[in-house]
Amino acid sequence: MKNYYQIPDKDYLRIHFVRPRFKSNIENVLLYMANECCKIEPTTCAEYASKINQAIRMFPGNIDVTQKTINNWRTEISALCAFYTEDKIADRTETSKLSFFLNEHQDLTQFFKFLMVSFQFPGGHIKSEDNIELIVNGVRFKPAQYILKVLMAGNELLSAMGSEKEMIISDEEATYCIFNDLQVTTGKRTPKEVAQIILDNRKNKLSYYNRKDPRVLNSKGKPRTKGDVVRYAGDIMDYMEIASLLERRMDGYFILKPNGLVDIQTFLDDKSYFKGYEKFYKVKNLKPSMLKPIERDWFDYVNKLVEPNKFKTDIRSIIQTSEIEVVFDNRIREIIESQSTTTKDIGNIGESIIYSHEKQRLKLAGYDDLLHLIAIVDSPSYHPGYDIDSLEGDGTNHHRYIEVKTTISRQKINLYSFHMSSNEWFVAETHREHYYVYRLMLSSADKTLYVLRNPVALYKSDEIKALPRNGMEISFDSSKFKPEELLVWQG
Image 1 (tube, rainbow, N blue to C red):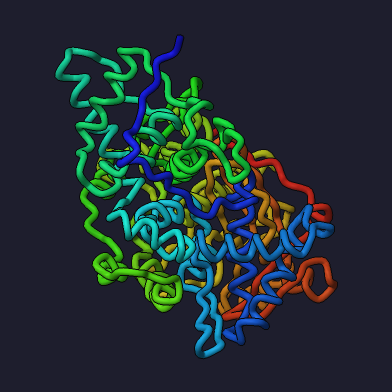
Image 2: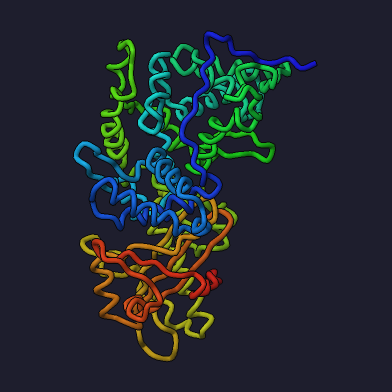
């Protein structure tokens, strides 16, 4: 007979929040939607919603879905990611700073760090009636930070016991020992106490999900599945994995990301908290309409947390060291593996990889004598409109001007769009067939390179699409362009 860990009724409150229907493909969806949102100028709420709906329907696989599904996507994208802000009093919706930031930097790992550092209960990503329940019960809770503190505390406890094991945590443990316990979410129980409870529960072989517990019944009086019960804590830890804060082991347990300690420490030290709901904690008979005006303040708060130089992705957290040693030449490897210098800027990583690619391309073409002419263009005062000055390698002395557009993510990304500045587009028009865009998509499992030669001519011949917005928003059909082999420098 199983023995179960039981939260006392007085301390039980099931925390829940908007769970996107596109979670299984969340990285591709968010990159696509950030790009689409950035194409929309500020307009009325209805017009903006209509344009967002059109973009959602054009996402692969959505052409035949119901309007209700489209509307749900729109709501979920807004609530979860703050991609746009609505001012219903002024009847105006505009794309947010966060959306522009993701579209420009293409760093999903960094984006999810910002998402997790801002994620709190209560918060504007939750329905007003659900926020009322949290406020009435005194909840003030930042889940990502708390989970990290539990894992750190658990490591200290294990070390004090003489164990060399690392603290781990499962979806169930996070649900029952953290998320659904008011002792935790109201700040009455420390992370160290929670870590000790989890370790004791394992020692005593206590189970968690009990389908006979009346508190797991749904609105129809039937038991929720185990997956349904633990999904909210599971979602947060999945997002933390995308953010390179946690790592999921083969057995399903999570541990602290081994090479993510710098950013983990930033999370542990973080003091940010949205205080817009504080004035409601002593108000009786709260109504959703009273909380509605706070939503705009919430989205402003989330967007103000975005700092371009904070949480930049360390390529070492995406690509394993053994892989780096194969892919990059000595100069690049030294930068990446240096303990004093971390190559966090995605643009620099992309340029470095393409620099290596170009050297090998010319070598294979028999132009070893020209390798020294390949250069990463690095000007502190201006951007010349391209990143790498290479050569065609076709028997001529023509240069190949390469603009590198890079996206890095943990999962394979299929995003066939990117932004070109006004200057880049002008330079592309000037150099014509000698100007190239290298669209590089990197993940821990895959590296994909598309080469677009003479993008202005491709646009004029309708082979790619370009929408003017502070330059050009470029998109292309992957079926019309074959990915190129990403070459490894064999110097």
